[in-house]
Picture 1: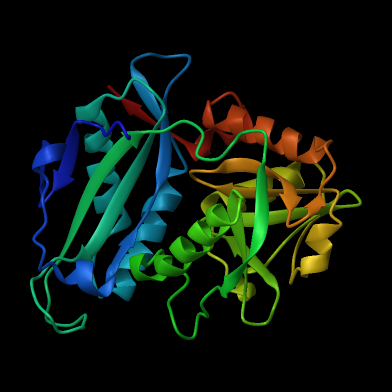
Picture 2: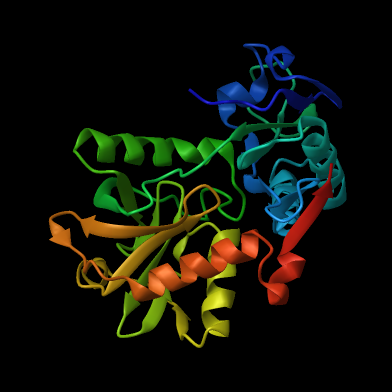
Length: 303
């Protein structure tokens, strides 16, 4: 069971979460014509009177861009203002996750984006570790990641997540924790809802955005931090066999943060993961506002 935050932003007002209801005829429910964001927040360990949000500006920018695919003119500034007020009204006391969502809110049966109402809501829930902190066991999915020529993969379009859902359930049903999807070229793409990194001989590799991956904000953060720490980070196509013989591998995402991969199919990766752990400690310190160099990544919400 999830512990949802008590207040939601719905139809341009803040109301109790349990009162935020949609009609069964809502257009987005039938056609996947929605787009969402996801961001984490924590009570400031040093100041009980404020909340820390990780890279709020980038999250709001990405959701505003996603809204454009739905022909919805919603600015990053509007989203940020609503999220800030949402946090202040809920005053969360534990680490939490925020889900803002843009969607076609009209009631109708014609799949379209023109001449149809759109709306925007926000809800949240308490959230600790999304995946096991000590690592996950993965399998290659029989499902392939969509291509950008058939789906706008620069946005987090809700309809696209049927593939993630199929892949995740396939992994769990076959005794694994997570699924790794290939793209249509047979190269490693991403997990069901996370980006993927491989470490070999002290270098860090990750599929580039030309490999149909989501432009993950945590992914971008890891690449910047890794380079600042002196590691070489290379964006390029990654083969299946590279993952099977990797020195280290890990998943990244807002929910997953940095999660080590300990097994792929029947291949066990090394137990020692020094680069993964160093990056995880650094990202954790940044989100807790303990790294002055990255203070502009942490948005402070006064309560």
